[in-house]
Image (tube, rainbow, N blue to C red; front, side, top):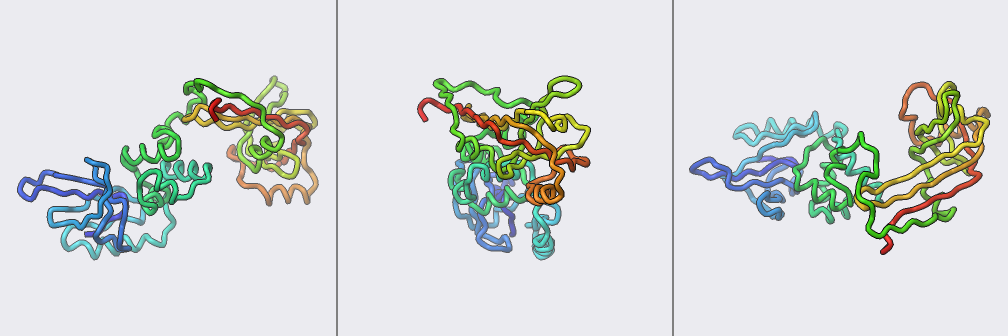
Length: 305
């Protein structure tokens, strides 16, 4: 018998073949996937160390390509082990849920060990969820959402086509101004912000991938795009973040003159320090720089904080 993290251990009645108990394998004690296992039982949500008997078998979940689980059928273990080992040197194929969990954990500065402890799961199982294409059960998602202060729907990507901020307002909100240092800390180091410009068709607000270089906001665009209209004018640039689960958030506003960057050395320096290509794609090699002439921000929290 061999198992992968996320597989199900099923115990059946030896006389009727009916499932008596099942649980999720959340911990392995041997690299080859042989028993014993740490199993989280579906009926109690408790994790116990299990040495499977003859009435138990493994029900394999779908794994990433190249990591097919070994069969637990008699006579198939050697073949399954070879198939599993053949995929160990291939890069993991993280699923959408795993990427969202990893991104939110990283954003909050949490280690896997801390997050796993909060979610009451083995760190190795959390690593499996983050790095492999997996579809964890609802109970696991609920614990992860609780550990990260978010929702199951958010981890599944629900609401991606809806604007943020549709939750209920705080009972006792507190709105305060951010200091320049607090604004700069939230603005650094890069991300997605919105630039407000005047175009021949009227005012426009456009999201762009930006970098903070010294005392300027820098972003790449195309010469005929709406953000390019910022060159030679005073513009407003805004970044924000909303915590839907806690109904709180912040926003930072930059106002200053925008210019096109033409010096080859400066263009090269901006390109070398860029964290990502523009999400919009296409040829966007024109760098625009906004001087941080005025920097303000506000934050909404609970009055109790």
